[in-house]
Image (cartoon, helix red, strand yellow):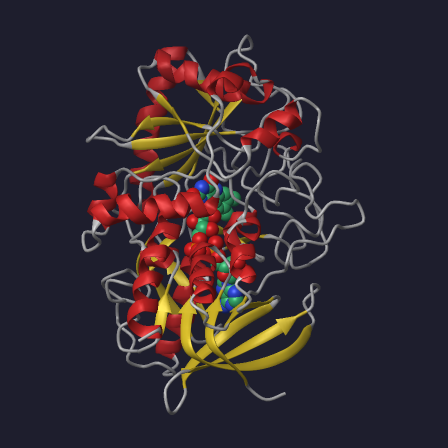
Length: 502
Ligand code: FDA
């Protein structure tokens, strides 16, 4: 079949993409969204849309023969991962030397698999990383707009104090307090009212059924329950799934031509498609958007793209670690999959750390506290295009994770010393106490104000825009999706006013 045309195309359906589609639709602009993953709305044979973390099946991961969970082992035993049939599952782990990156695949992108923690960054951190953006306006207009659009809510502190499913967080809070560290509640997009009803046995369990990284069957306001239905409700948005954009070129007379491949859920090619558009918005995430633009520059399709494409990538200082508590400090057999508390040591100028207290929902008592620490780091990687594979390859040396390990270690050494506790070495493979070779928070590659103008317009190419986490230069100091959403709200408002409705 020949090329189809849509006035606007949005690549991806994650945070930046969903915001962009809603605002384009509300402005009356017919928009096609292209998403390589599936729409997750059909129950499998077990009656559930998603599989659970404790018995993962083909739905768990993106075309794998075996699952690749972040906690590889327990007591050094290979008891966590399972053999699966290759399928368009919801979580991908993209491998690079020394740094793997977890990303969501499906309508809703990372919102389908993430912990839902919805954190607005410290104003000082935001102003540091994006000095060209009016911070006043962001905190007055766009952060509130993003929080409202995402459906962010807070845990009821009284319920938190008594709920069995947050015993793990209370134990971690106490061991932090003994060492002199404070904690803060963390807002979430998971409906805490639903969670309380799960706890009371009134509704089907999701957060309390070890569901998180392979999707939540209930309770979570992922983008397919917030921005995307609102976008579809404008009547101007179409979403085409299982369709991966592979190349971008310019069309004579303006606009862009995309070549995309559509597959079935088992990976067989259904069709190769060509789609023309006038306005092209890239929301394929830090890895996806950077790769599309790097490929376009290096193959000569868009030769005038900036040398800044592929630069200034970071892992948001992500380090995972775990501690063994004393036997009289059980962390609970049922742990909410949605974190609600963090060790908030962001204000320390010497070693700022924000450590989310993560669940280890094994279904049995482990006495473990698990943490995802967000450390401050100036280390950045960059991408090189490999013409043989057509892929963008991350350059990240093992030494680049070491400042983050040192930062996390300083904080948790103090907690262990004050409590007489130790690290767990059995969870991350290679006898490591600090997982420094994977991340959940890829950021950068097409940085705002460098590879693009101050509103995400790609330099050198009119009507080509970037809307996602690749705009943020490698670090934001907290979990990133609220910042990605707010920045997308800011940028699309300007682009619609100045470029689209002009
Ligand atoms: P995002 O990655 O969300 O979306 C990109 C979409 O584009 C995907 O759906 C992808 O399939 C699609 N795509 C890519 N290439 C394509 C192509 N060529 N053609 C078509 N489609 C393509 N953050 C946070 O704030 N709080 C938290 O609690 C967590 N927890 C967390 C846990 C886990 C396990 C993960 C993996 C991640 C988190 N995160 C998080 C991170 C958060 O999910 C992440 O920062 C955002 O999803 C990034 O949003 P983007 O809009 O940049 O892209």
